[in-house]
Image 1 (tube, rainbow, N blue to C red):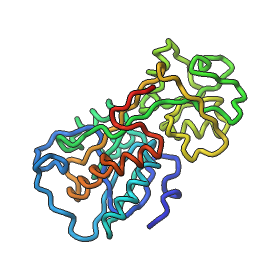
Image 2: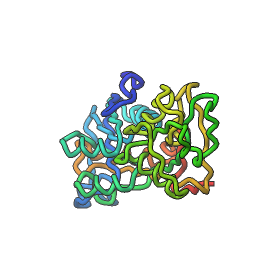
Image 3: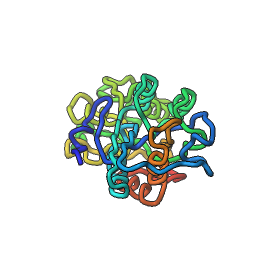
Image 4: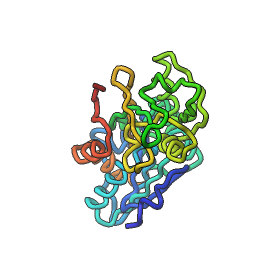
Length: 279
């Protein structure tokens, strides 16, 4: 099995190879039930021998999906999984350009809707996968003494936010707007991981990321939790593609992610379970 850490570095269109190509298509698409790998009663043949599965997932799912892909490979000897991580908008653009995605997973309902409208998901397949929430990233030791969201409007603070076109960017601005805050970011990034990297590199004093972004982040950054009354859950969805190269494999990966094993691995990566409420 090839190393995933080298191929899953920060940046656009990251890929990692794993035995069995997983296809993640977030937010249902329009197609006939017979072509939906997850549709009840659909006739699906098992993969014939060694096969590959292409999974396209939002960057914040990297740690969890690497673990789920490894588990899939263990359960399907001879299978090979290719993971493609990026922001949801970038994934949609890649699919529109012909990128192969057998399974799709994203964390933004508006992006899910666009993926569905573009015809990339199987009807009846999109389902809630997990939930996330935002947190504030600051430099280790919190030199600017950031206590919460209200501090992010300070003039002496260099703020990093996700771009307005990104899932983390939209979610961050929504949380800030609830407090009637609209700070101008000093820097913007395409994903939550990239926002975190800006803070770690000293390009920003603070940034809004996902709570799961801190897994494996190292000692250069520190997490400040956002109270539940100021937070809102980010809903992640998973779907088989409309026309996956391996329908059975796509359905199996989707089922694994939604089942007890996948949910445990998502929990290990810091995600909240399906339907969870912030406390």
